[in-house]
Image (cartoon, rainbow, N blue to C red; front, side, top):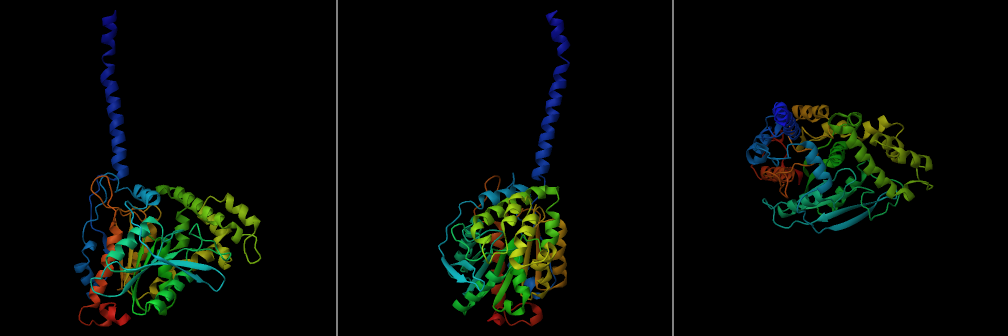
Amino acid sequence: VEVMASLEELPLLPVFDGVKLAALATVLYVIVRSLHLKSSPAPPHVTYQDTPLNRFLFKSCQILTQEYIPPLLWGKSGHIQTVLYGKMGRVATPKPCGVRTFLPMEDGATMTFDIFEALGDHSTQDDITMVICPGIGNHSEKQYIRTFVDHSQRKGYRCAVLNHLGALPDIELTSPRMFTYGCTWEFAAMVSHIKREFPQTLMAVVGFSLGGNIVCKFLGERHSNQERVLCCVSVCQGYSVLRAQETFLQWDQGRRLYNFLLASKMKKIILAHRDTLFGTKSSRLDDADLNRLRAATSLMQIDDTIMRKFHDYHSLKEYYETESCVQYMHNISVPLLLVNAVDDPLVHPSLLAIPRTLADKKANVLFVLTQHGGHLGFFEGAVLLPKPLTWIDKLIVSYTDTLCQWGRQPAHTPQDGHRLRSAQ
């Protein structure tokens, strides 16, 4: 009887093994698909016009034509790149030493920025200052900013980094106002200070995420803002705040979850300054706004309850449209490098039509689109561990170096592109 029973069980064993094998195959398939392991490294796709300057860029700035190689096991996932950037920032982050400047604003606010002097000679011996605007709620002490500053310093660049109003945890607000998506007042004050303190310097303007929106809006607001500007680089911004916020309410690519996490970050920053922002005589916010803030679960709710009121916008639509750089970018005439990643989970693919169209129409614009990189990630590496220096750090410095070299070439006509010497 025992032997017969054993024989009856034998046919079930292959079936059971087949189920396990199928389950394992399914798991492996999901991993391969979600991590995009079959995706091959590729050079970025660049939208541009055929001009002498752009031909010089492609010849001399070789990173534009080389493959971007993210870490093999996880670097092709935009989500992992974004999460690692958000949680880790960068690996082996340096600690550059800078000098902090405090400037009073006309409305009683006090803005701050940090200046980091160059640690070596520039390749062309030019005096160039990287004028940097960080991402939402960020400042000079963030790891990705420190890594980029250190790399720039070692390549001979002075760096000036804006600390968004209210972002530094140990500095109190001196007026009932903090940073917004497109308020350029603080950035303009920093640029004016740099021009006064370093009358021989040219500026390479760099913006990350929200900072990209601010720097492009600043340059496009009036032509005088582009004086002594060598170039502008914008990384991982969404260009239209109105359209970006509409996509942030969608669940595809987990965008609604990212919205919630960013909203939580903003609530934390605002609540850290609630004594200054709420209930004072000069404040535009009251206790009812504070209660609505605590209940908010999206950036749009916070923007409607709090952010638009700092500048007396009558509606959320007016706030988003006025604070977006898309209304101003066509006024920029200096070399403009716009960088995004296809797998950025925060920037909807439909928004990328804006920089692509601009690059098609304007000879001074390059739109660089990588297949991978996530939101401000752009980690490089072999299999598992990322390198301390990222692809985007190298690209910005290499692009700026190339424009300095272009300025050393024999005289060009205005149609050939921006001339370094003409800015002086």
